[in-house]
Length: 304
Ligand SMILES: [Zn+2]
Image 1: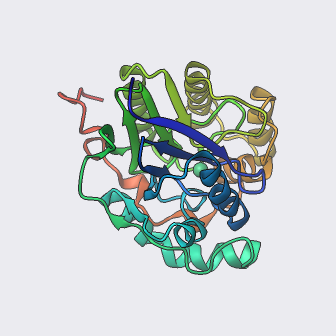
Image 2: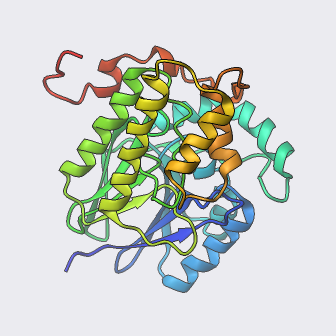
């Protein structure tokens, strides 16, 4: 039998239903993606204790977005032996925007919901880890809803934890950072790479309460979302209004009915005529990323 098991915790709707994954071995456990909000992190602490008495040795982060690491503090306080890690390129991305995000989110949501000083990860220098004899491979950097994501691949278990490279079909996709065709193509290549792993289980970055993971359906949902983005936004003959963008995506994915103001409000403002662009998200020179940075792992990289 494969030595590792995975368990998922879904954050509250207020916490954007982000997914936290516990990887358990016979003697130790590790966590991927702490939640955004403190109450959800408190819930993760008791959830871990309900699953295993084994020590938590590490907490990993898939990407720099605050809804995947901001409330690591309560978890690290509860399990002080655990290290907080991310791939070096994720640490760099966190550093780029940390000061601004830390000013923004506790002020917006309140200090009882968001830590004022979220712990920062230390760079994890390896491309894999071995937990109780089970291997987890870190694949990255790859494009997802933001630049520089890590996929966590458990080959023996055929499970891949993908963060916000794939959204479950319950949720709108954060497509707001697709600034160029290269970013769009980079994200599609990541989806192709995940499919090539032939995983049985894909742990998505967001999954609403009452929904179950479905590797094929969630992958298809994210592909469909990106295809609609290309048709209606990137390649549209005429820019839609803010309201039209909102309605187009709302109507195309009626089952995704949570946090519309956040996901669709930002998308509509970013790409709709006269919309108000969310400047808080501009630290990563997304628009300047070249294909070789985004897809350089494709050998040989075909002409665009
Ligand atoms: Zn997210």
